[in-house]
Length: 181
Length: 202
Image 1 (cartoon, each protein chain N blue to C red):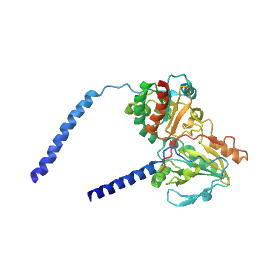
Image 2: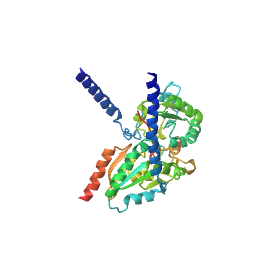
Image 3: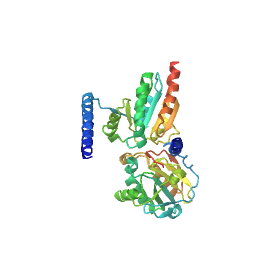
């Protein structure tokens, strides 16, 4: 009885340590230095240019902020979607509504943590209303907000609040598939 | 017996899942439409952070009332703390009262009270735990302002001003609405989109 009380936990500890140690080594070897994300400031005119410019495929724009919990929660889904659809000619950009003082700190830090590769912008305006209206008059400015534009710059899908990944994929499929057929 | 237990377990799981879906069905973006300009809000009551029931009627100013949906943790709302307090002070003597409402489900009355003390917010702040009043107004973010005249008719809805950074304020939309009303003039810009953190609803 006493034997099992002592030996079993000790054996379990050894087993766990032996499993954890190589994992740590593997992690150490695999970690390559990654270029830190650069977040570019964008004003209303540049945002308009981005949305309306000639493109080969659809454009997905996600408005978010580091202080917005549902924005942070949905980000892993967005990163997956970017990875999945970028080869299928989907352009995906993120626009942060954080404060300009966060452009080199909190915003790229979060994007790096998420391993986000889509071009990242931060809305640099003294008045956000024209930008909000430019994107969608019906949008009140609450975050997160995700808009999918076709090649002509028309909104084909919008979602205010945390995205439903399946629903977003379905919307993207409609525009990217249509182009391929 | 085993099969019966299993079916009970499955039924229970089904119920839990269904309830989960029903509760979670309300997505972040699904907020009732904002109260239309010109409509009148009925009197309501909510507890303040000391749990005393307060009615809109008892808090209203003789020349009108500003309802501000605010938050404890939202950095945008917090960037406005000093401006909101100044607004309350400036217009109190002109007969317009400022009332704050915290509708964030994760911020309880104790947190609201501590936040008000820390940031020296002297105006009344009500706790809207079930988002009933946020739904009534159709408020979606913090900070978000509603200006009601002496008869509780909505004259202005939206942001406090154009910029989170106080140094960049160019259009103090809410103050403009209050000043116009006090001068007996119509409010020129009745709506300006509020920007900030989403109200975390139950």
